[in-house]
Each structure stands twice: as C-alpha cells, then as structure tokens.
Length: 262
Image 1: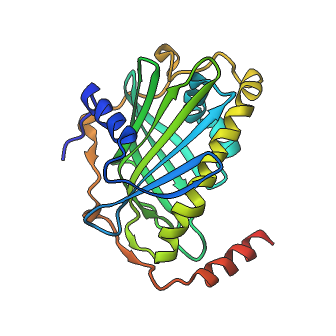
Image 2: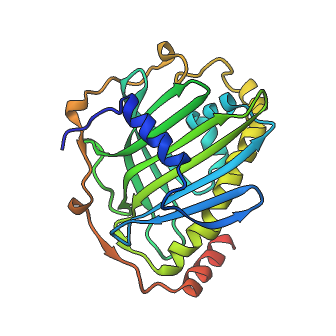
Image 3: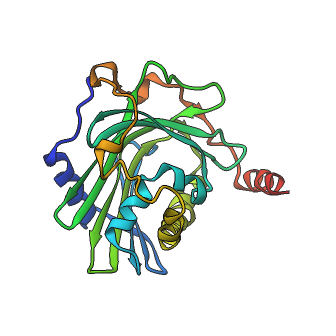
C-alpha cells in the first residue's frame, strides 16, 4: 500500500476522536489523568486514549517537548533508542523508536511516518507505521505496528494546556491479559505524568541546549536527508512475525524486573 501524508481532513478526524466520548469506556481516572479504552474487533489491537491537564505549561512548550528527540532521551525511561531517518515535507518525517517491555517479554520497535500541524490554538502530531528499505525488522526486537498514534495539545490560556494521547498499536504478539490491564491502569497514567514533569523542566534544559534550534517549528533548520514517499510502503501487520507470549506470568515478569534493577 502506498504511503499518504496526512492532510487537514486527517488531522481534523484525529482531533474529533480525541474529543469524542462516544464508544469510550473510562478505565482510570486519578490524579488529573483519565484513560479510556475502546476494544476493536481484534482483541490484540486495543485503542487507548489518555488526557492530562498540564498546569504551568504552555501548549507551545508541550509541543516542543514531544518533538525534541534530544530531550526525550532525558525523560523517556522506557525508550531504548530513537532517531530521525529523513524528512518527507516541511511537516512530515520518518523515524525509528524502540522501547523496553517487561522482561521476559521481547522488546518492541517501530518505524513510523510522523506528521504535525498547528491548527488554531491546537497542536497535533500523528503517526503510523511504514516500511523503509534500509530499516528492516531487527533480530532482537519484535517490529510492532502503529495503526494510528498521536497527540492533541489544546491551549487553556496563557500558562495551561490539555494533552490528549491516542494510540492504536498492534504489538505483533499474543500478550498476556495482565499486560493489557497493566497498560491502562499503570503504564499509561505514569507515562502521561512523566510527560507533564518533563514539560516543567524543559524551558531550563532548552536554554542550555541549542535554545534556538527547533526544526519542527522552523523548517529551514532541518538538516535531515530528504526521502521520497515513493520509497515507503504502509507496514502491514500480517507481513511481520507474530509471537505468542500469552503464557508469561506477571510474577515471572516481576522477578525479571527485580533482577534488572539489582
């Protein structure tokens, strides 16, 4: 399938999904974070939506934090590696991201096309998985598939904003039910709070690290190599390895986690 760069209609549709309550069931609502779940036809592909109100953070700062790959390495402790591969347009690029799964589950990685758009007082970033000929699946990772993942940032005045995070990912594996539950009850809320804390510290950090460098805002600063959309195809889940990890117990995973920390 050919890759299509999102247009305004796609961004508006994504914003509508973030704001809509229809068909969503709240699974978590504590400490200013809400997590909703929406089961699709395929039970292995769960759609999650999260929201957090970020006081003392401008929408512009939050937008910068989500874009700034160098800063992400400081706060995203679940991340193993991330880097930009190349740019498609002034507001679209292709990148790589890998993250830690609870041991002994295999770690996952993605290659995604990301696009972004300021829309009135809102900022939107969305991505979905693509195939790039120079970045095939790796031996030690399970190549997961983002069907649709993104952020909606809404300004609530001079120094406050709301962040929505919506994600539909195929992990390419039969995961244990406890993993699915843990994502909505623990991993997702923790991730939202981590982003919020990162935003509070970002202005000071950025002042010391190329304060004027923001290629996501100023395309003329972008030094990534240009790549053609014709070199990409949509990453179909059924073309990737599918592993069965459904028998992994939570107790076994916890033991591995404890061993990793010691």
